Amino acid sequence: MLSRGDIVAVCGYPLSTGCLAIESLFKKAQIPLVISGTSVRLKNQTDNLYLFRGRASDAIQAQSAAAFLAKDLGCNKIMGMLYENNDFGQGALSVVQEYCNANKINLVSEGFNATDTDLTTQVLKLKKAGVQSCVAWITASTVPTVSSCMYNQGFNVPLCGPVAVTLEENLKNCQPEWISGWYGVTDICMTKDNKALKSFISAYYSMFGKDAYLSNEGANIYSHVLWLCDAIQRAGSTDGKAIMQAMRATDNFPGLNGNYKLIDKMVDYVRGCDIAQDKVVNGKITNVFIKSVSLY
Image 1: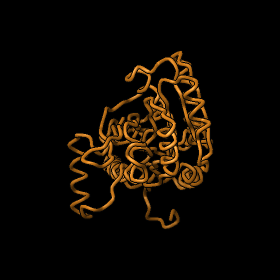
Image 2 (image 1 turned 45 degrees about the vertical axis):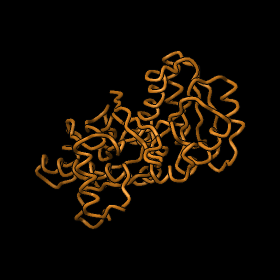
Image 3 (image 1 turned 90 degrees about the vertical axis):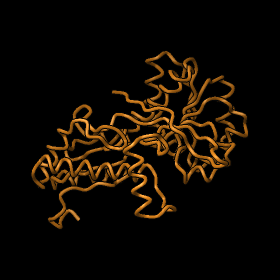
């Protein structure tokens, strides 16, 4: 694709592992790459001015989850964390541990493998430790397993997970009683009362039909395209370097998932996210907007 000669920028890549594998190609070609991958490694292990993350990183999202439980819900003595034993989960663990240390909160953590089908041991350890709340940093495939196990073991403390616990395609794989009441950190709570978001959703369904699937990732990428167009207009050029410089100079461009502005030196441009809660509404499990948060 990069060898075509008519590509001036690329957006839409959601997976961190794939982003890490290809970002150097875009750096060499001097073509901006806008990504949705959230791994902290995309910032810590890259040196690429052409790499732009248009979404809050795992570090921001995991800290937001811990801060919400501790500050908003008052669970500031003993916090639990259940995490997957992979880059996603362990990266979040380090962030939550740092937050708890800084705020004198005792963290009790338990890891598990994504292929595990019984988490009774981990959940009972968290219960025995007397945790007041729990950050559950899990991916889509483990949402039913984790939520059902916690429900069946009577683990009745406030729970906050990543975007996976708010997405419709994951909620439909859970019994409502398993997941109802969970909080989730998400780029965009699609049910919040926001004029620009409502306008996008209305236009989307008008174009693709009322039964078309739409998630926050679609809203993210829509925002990324608008951000690129804005940068090209400000650059007055489709030259890759000129677009890169215009994007780096972005000053609070209004994306659906927050305002875009460079954080630190490179890669990250979105500092905020939404907190949503899973609830049964009109007999169907969905999520409702709680608040927007920003760490910077």
